Length: 328
Ligand code: ATP
Ligand code: LTN
Image 1 (cartoon, protein in one colour):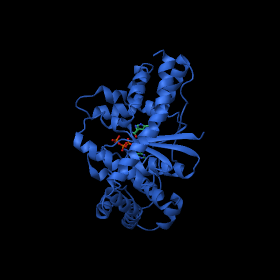
Image 2 (cartoon, protein in one colour; image 1 turned 180 degrees about the horizontal axis):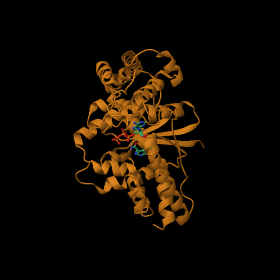
Image 3 (tube, helix red, strand yellow; image 1 turned 45 degrees about the vertical axis):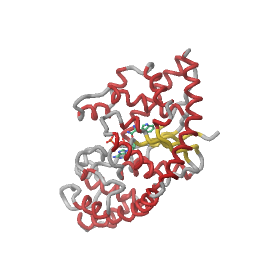
Image 4 (tube, helix red, strand yellow; image 1 turned 120 degrees about the horizontal axis):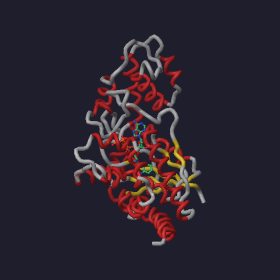
């Protein structure tokens, strides 16, 4: 039996280059290795932990599904499904809630950050990491490829699994996080001290994967820079240029010191102009594929139906084992 890779993105906001360079690019690489059983989920039940408009949510679920496919997640090699189609996720989350200490959830930095932005903090937002633990543990996952901001949640998942196994017997496999060293944390274009985020109020914070070429050029042109003129990676003194260098390296597949050499003696304007063209060129094939998939909703529906069926088969076994171990 192959080890399992599991990950997901919530269908909220606009999927951006940080999501791609930090998380989804790893998924495609792991898929290509042919070493794993790959399972990728559209985590719609995570999206509703903050208020959503139902029509917009439906549209976002479709968009994220098409983006997975357009980015190279291949339904022949990976299971692709929507979280709410497999009811075991919500059910296991409840069981895991009964072994999760309140204090552990109170420590979660994503909860603290997101709670600050809400008028009314919902219980679902607080319990979000428990649902994420259920997602991962249902598939006896070994590898969870995510960006750095999700490490704390994967660590909590490990703790929840260990606690459950200690109390009730070995039901869950303990998962490991997989990070992409160079691009695990892409920062906002408008503020290099905060991560690029799809729930950012200002669209100048991110480059969405579906942004038109002229929008990309404009956003890079207006991205904040640091004082001085040198194109140099220096996180402390030049956080903005360092972030742009990371993005450049991520898309051009070049080490940062090589990029620094290319731009020795050149200014920010030239560097930014080239960076914009690299992003435009790299995103072009994805955008073409996305448009093609939009014309084929039946095919996409079938992929999701097959995906949910395959996922449910595994998830139901784990849930049964968990319930049985607990005496339910
Ligand atoms: P939100 O701001 O609404 O929480 P997000 O932009 O953080 O959204 P998520 O859906 O939380 O996006 O993340 C999807 C995946 O992308 C996760 O694996 C996450 O770690 C990764 N990711 C998100 N933002 C970044 C970033 N700025 N740099 C690298 N990886 C990221
Ligand atoms: N919380 C993650 C999305 C997510 C996830 C998962 C990632 C939900 N369930 C399981 C990996 C494995 C986020 O990126 N905000």
